[in-house]
Length: 501
Ligand code: MN
Image (tube, rainbow, N blue to C red; front, side):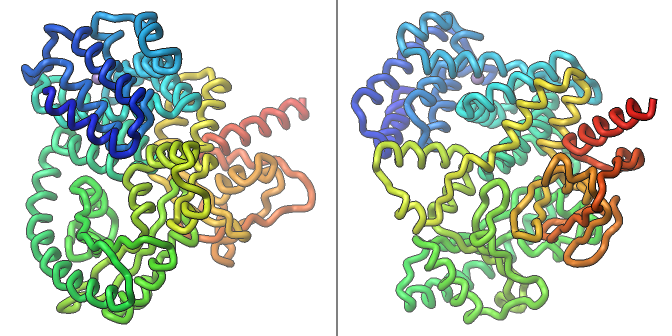
């Protein structure tokens, strides 16, 4: 146990060699051990191992000292022998606030097919806490990650519930926070408990494909490394396996019908380089070494990042024996951001504050640290004040905030992030709350589309306005999916009803 703790200290030292910080972390470890004396996990291990592992995950995201200390202390109030005033006295206001936040959001209970007031109230608390200080949720995610890693020890009758809650709330939440590594690990840990037979089927089918694809990747890697180094580029190349859960979701999609051969990114080749300029040079090298697959196109998420901040260039080429293979190119820093998302954002702003790194350097490496991307969290916190009906709030969270996303562009090239199934009407209300009142027709990629059309990722959507204000149509409520649109339409309709009376 003490060895594991020294390991945590070593990781912290690698990015923050401040004696005061290290002393505070040592103190937190001692405090946690005392507060959890005699308590055990289901695995039979001392309870405090869980605090240690939670803190370790937070250090791997390079978070600041207060957050790591809060990781060590996150259960001492709830399950241990200490209270908030002790924490405030020993570790200060900030740490106490974080621990309090985590304690308050720790009781999210989920009953299948059943809406519990208590559950929704806790979700409300979580989003409110998140809007105030994101680090609360980062501690919560680290806590959940370790609990999922040790789920096999939990009594059988509770496993499925915990796993389901992970799939419905925590995995999509981390996905929306841009934390790709966490969301796919959470999904893969929960998958076998929630959908056991599907899991077995995917695993069996994928194993064969992984093996074949890996062989291809090895060959491509060798020739690409050589070609890149002759351009003077020092690159790191990895094969990235698609996680079982996301593979399953893709296999279930229309037109694929469980044909593994139709999924081209089961294993993708990932090229990591130092600068943005090198990314584009590397793209040229890839296309000279392997033939580009026509019509699939190149996706340049560096020039146009995804709404959750994801940056990378994706292209598809014919690999050895004509096998179509996806190649992803990004800088090391973009990779860090894609894996750790908001957490990486925190780490970079911390480094900037301490003048370890400056803006030019961040720019060269392709780091975009923008708070704007998280506007949906603030939006949700706003709603939670406005929406008094619990069912409506739950719907806003599950079908709006945590649903799978598409992203579409305005004619000016601004990117908008909407839930899957969104229509031009949803887009109009996302653009501007009044725009729906002038909505006449809509175009996607230059062609007129019906108003109930389901938009697809990558489309450029244009709203055609009428000169005069008109009232939204009641039928729109049948097919809009965003809370924003539903609320604005409702408001406008209630108003016209009043006007008529
Ligand atoms: Mn915990």
